Image (cartoon, rainbow, N blue to C red; front, side, top):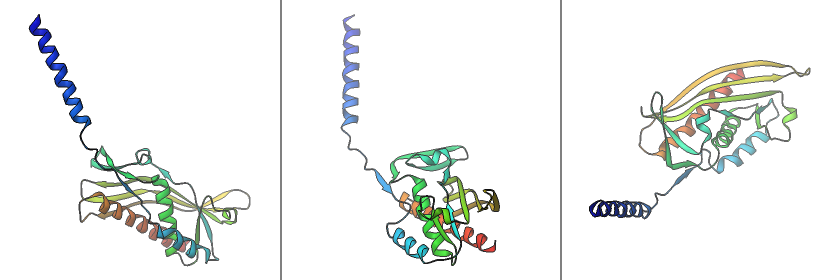
Length: 205
């Protein structure tokens, strides 16, 4: 009986020491990332305000559920995702995509002016751009992908709508280096690639 009590006491002490050791380990530093750069906002404002052509409102971007959390995700297999505890978006990904996409759209388009849904002149727009993002992620295949759908819908005087463009997209960039900073940089490039596609299609219509 005494031996059992002694063994139980030793086990309890060992557990307490183990927990104490874990709790005293130095915390791993969290790294925060912005998809858009601070300098992009001023450039976007300058480019968009100088245009007198078509006005298109970028509506609230819809993201897949796994993209709404702050931890940056990586696809390990077809149906397996990993979320980093130490690499985190500094703001909601929806906001980062919106700012980056507006910047690139206005930089590339010669006549069309793209504005956010919160713009005070949105009621003057002639069309809306609706974007749904299904995947925006780095993969174990050494690439990053951006996929989803977008629509450009013309406004009508009778409150109806006319879908000018409905397009699926699947874009990718190859990763040349390891690390989250490089992955985020490539993800930013994918937004630029998407803006190029949108401007080219909108100019044809």
